[in-house]
Image 1: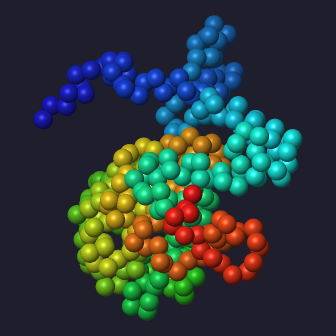
Image 2 (image 1 turned 90 degrees about the vertical axis):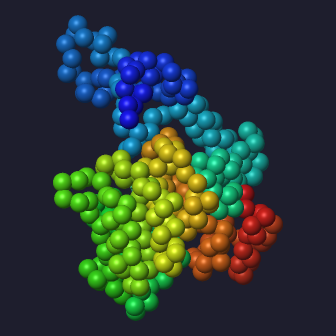
Image 3 (image 1 turned 135 degrees about the vertical axis):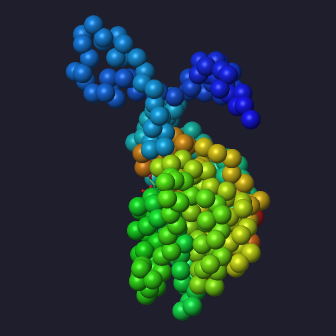
Length: 313
Ligand SMILES: Cc1ncc(COP(=O)(O)O)c(C=O)c1O
């Protein structure tokens, strides 16, 4: 079938883009910064100072124009008010609740309920926390299915989880590769690997969008297939969040993790996020201060009173 997109030039496509005006909200590096200073002739100075075409949002998203002002404001509050910024913030952004100001928006971005999403940590630390809760290997069911070319740190995390539970990574990991001559994974091949290892697999971990090939995985189909076989499934959404439509709740995904410095443009070191489906909220887990109910959090007593869902920020 003819693709109507190919009838238009990139300039025409840009002109028709409904999101076009958002470009004005970001700072784009100059070409000089990208190709390196001193590489252009003096006569090219004007040309080399123009904005670069930035195709690196998969690594670090561009800086929104508002970021600098807001960060400087927070630094000023820290300087002027010190610890009082936690509760009596002069701009009404108390740091104690800072994650709750974005959780609702984040839940919309990933298609989760408000109570299923937390803005916290970094992708890899979040992955470890959630594998600590969801990867419950037994002697007969301990395998983890992932891509052969998953982002290396996902391999490190998965291998270390298997070893932590006393399994060798050679025994525990099942990796999936593209067919010879292909770059992307065939969904049928993924389902076949799950089917062939249905009795021994404890966890499937896949990316929503593959970091190198850009492949968009059939998340709903693969999730359903794994869950029908009693296998826990988690998704690394580093390259999917803010990039493609996600409906984690409706797709019945068990858990997902992501970072926010790529397509969410939070900047280097930005806070990541997690999704845990409401049907999984009873999982045993590692706990911390912010899991304690708000009203008595500062009573500083030892017994944990878990934050009720009604109090999730
Ligand atoms: C797909 C994927 N997974 C994991 C990571 C690691 O993220 P972090 O180092 O923020 O934990 C990255 C980083 O780029 C990534 O692209």
